[in-house]
Picture 1 (cartoon, rainbow, N blue to C red):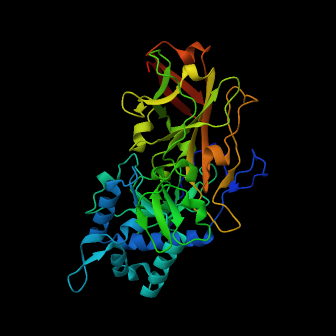
Picture 2 (picture 1 turned 90 degrees about the vertical axis):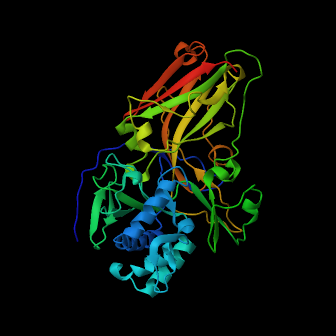
Picture 3 (picture 1 turned 60 degrees about the vertical axis):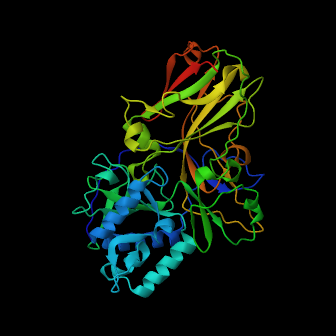
Length: 442
């Protein structure tokens, strides 16, 4: 077995962990739970080894590149459940019929020392136990999926296991097309293109036939992005917030219709290498930054305004402390109106999956209680509520990497600024994360 050892950069991550929901369960500020799903991890390793062997075939490399570049979720990701029945150009059977991606895997099974029967079982178990498995092609400094020279370059296939944690996981296992195994750094980018088998951060799986169907029947869900025998798979932005997604966000506060210069927009943000690596390693691709805004008007409201997800189309766009990444063109995105409160708390966080699906039955719910482990540069106000499961996080299995919280106060000249003035709010934790805001007319 070949081994490559690469030193891990020290990263300090402040993370919000999830555990099963209980109304009486107190918020635990110290415990972070990363549940390991050994059965799922074993399936991921089997599939990674098989895919590595399959990519000896140029037509398979072309297929994976084309699907990754399509960016179904905004990143270079491929949801296996959606791609498995697509045809692979140039890959045919003895009758000259074009094979699907799943069928083409059988033609390379022997190279991965996998029998047809074993592959049957693997694919069946993936569908039943790991419906959100994706084939990700993270952007690296050396290039992205778009730069992949499929005529010659055969990448490594790494596995992100279910208990992966940016703050503690320093190495991951990877496979090459010859069946060799490597241990590579999860924080320092590899020099060569590396594909990652991981749980999708942007897809939710809802059971097709389930005793707790009522738990999701109230969700106004559109046609699923993909289906398996056991699950309907939805893009997370198409699932309402109250059902665990990011679509159809709640709004609290807001101002009137006057022409005063009282609207505060978030315009841009950026990370340096250390800060970005602290919340999202290269192996996870571009970060998905989320923001909650609490309004103070005689006291903090218990319900936050959700601003959805800020996600650059490429990791490199937000990973440059010398350049700004605009969150919504040149206008930015509305955060709050100054005439709706005296001050406002902003919570920035990044959410990753745990690798498990909700276990919903007659005795359980799909919601999860989230503990907190938060960072306040100037201390936490006593009356500021923690985000809660049912109101704010709407937790499905996931872990929250807390970035920073900050207060905007009208009496703070720097935060309030002049009308149309762009203001930089910056915070140091480990590394630098900055946001650019602007107060404009309604």
